[in-house]
Image: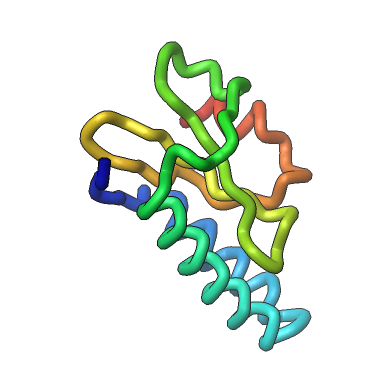
Length: 105
């Protein structure tokens, strides 16, 4: 079932912040990051159910998932798989305090 994808503004900000961080160290890596995020989002949009379940979201019966960004395996795209849409909520480095991130969503 094909569902429309919506990218939450916080996820857009995550992309901008990560791009800026990477650009300060390696502009080519920053460009590749943005391209890899686009690839990951296209894959999620076409096959959202293939993402790994994220059970620590503690959001009731919502179907939370995550996917790795190709070439940036420590960066994760977190999204909710709903019946009407796929909502990309955050794009973060996996070493971050994910419990804290999900407490404020």
